[in-house]
Image 1 (spheres, helix red, strand yellow):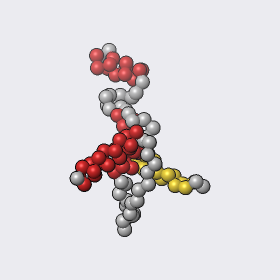
Image 2 (spheres, helix red, strand yellow):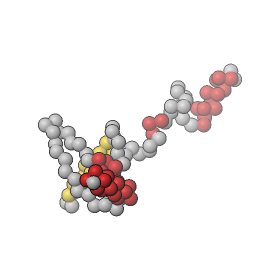
Image 3 (cartoon, rainbow, N blue to C red):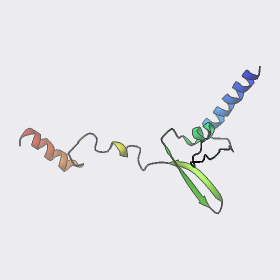
Image 4 (cartoon, rainbow, N blue to C red):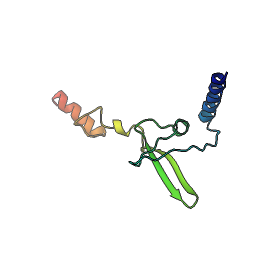
Length: 102
């Protein structure tokens, strides 16, 4: 019966995390190398995955942790479709003319 209760509690916890309606407080330990493991519920709440960055902000009110997002989620793909060609209409038209032999 304890497995069922644990399962229900876990499901309720996940539902609250998905809806972002929960005030959470979790603990983590710092290793000798200065690393921490972010608890699963917090990772889900922040929407971070392995390899994502976290930003630690401090002010008079305290310290906050939030995901470090890039300016655009598509920035890493910029220029991937036309290697060797500058971006912009002029450069693309010029490249097409070169390919056509004009």
